[in-house]
Image (tube, rainbow, N blue to C red; front, side, top):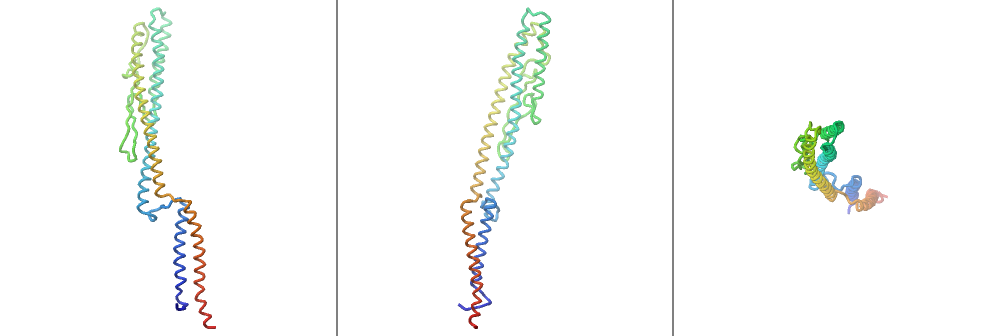
Length: 274
């Protein structure tokens, strides 16, 4: 091998090896800092594209969860209102049965009717205030729906109910009273049918709430599994990466020493002129 002070082949080789080691060390440090073996398209374009698509699915599922939560909350309010209406109907029946007694004096009947009217009007108050996020599921006007997939193309629709006075489910009217034995007897019949109808309505709302809960559980599981899949694609094995880091740091130190030795080689030429 010729001696030259103009071209140091050994130093070039040592520098190239040192540069490769430094690049690997930078990559390893990035993986440790980010926790990802694929943090950009430059690392692995195909894997990064797949991971980004899956991240989009997870983001969509987060919106699905919010939609299902809103629908569930609306149904919870509706169920609470329906149960309150059912309780009031039971109290109304007690008043109506008492008023059907032909032996009541006028003062007693008036007092019972006054209680009946207050309970009757309370149904209207409860139904009109059973609203969540602008939706009332028990006054016959609102609609309940929730998206179920990440692109919003599928939905769950839950039928709402009408628990207003005289609205069909509740057959007693907003003016019904028990001022006479005949009125009381008629009210008892209406109240009994109303109780049966409200129970049916509550069953429908409860089934809808259970369906939303099942869908919410499924979406949680699906989202978790997709997150795990993304991790399998892009997460770094930090135990192995840590070991690689130590090995590369040693290689870098050895590379620096090799470069230093290679740079000293031209100095040996001076000994030829002594």
